[in-house]
Length: 366
Image (cartoon, rainbow, N blue to C red; front, side, top):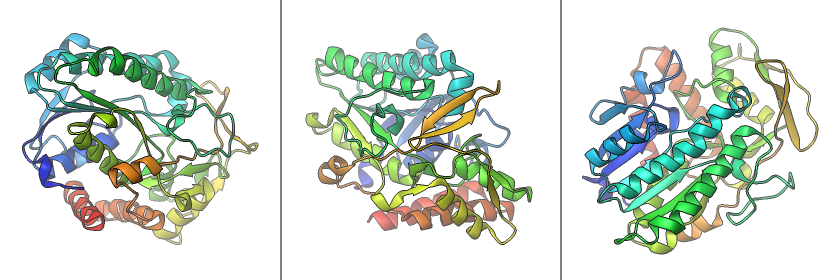
């Protein structure tokens, strides 16, 4: 991945106040990009955005992607060459609790971002980040390729499939016909880990929150399999894809950015290693049984909900065409995450810790 290319590039990033968006913002600024972020304010008492001072050195706009007029004005005003769309309602359980909001944000919000992008002069590449959960899960053992059918058995997954359909429709109707052409691609990645994630109902944040309070962590679905990866790995894929979109029209398509097969581990496997890295006082216990192929839980009203029992991605196209692959081995990714939180608790700067890990990642990628 050539890093100098980003120096001076004008980038419009939605979702910069979120976990992945915050890490992406720090990285792009470190690479010298002229960055504008657009997102709602942080939605938790502790946020990576505030602790890591993500807004420092960039144009940070607090706004809603459902406000099309303001979004369009903000994008036109920043005159971006590249648009990265990471803003989303990103939690399965929240999709059950607030399904209409989830569809509005993830489907209509994506349509708004793309409509604003096609109307902003100078845009050459757009990357829409969706999820590995956008695939229709007919076979729990399938390894999904980008051409597999899309679907979803829950509101969150369905909304991500919807975002993919929106992107495909607008690509064919507008982006491919624009002169000069605008490259539009979607990116699908799996579960990410990394320092500064305190989102509810994510495994590693839930583990660390419990360990910090010396309580046993409650784990819903210990046998569920996920393609875990450090947050910087899919971000490296997004930025590599954005660059190629500026140069190669054939890259305007869907892409998987999943880790290798040895990163596809059970929740229990990950919980054991996070606990071991945290220290002898850390422990977890199972709070829910499951059936093969599904992982159950309960929403805020006590109703049962279903998550996929296994998710696997085939990312061979990204490896072959972009030279992308996961660089951080899973045990190291978990260790980086635990050490980030332990060093933060010891008084170190969240921003400095994050930039240090970004530098370490760039050395691995090189």
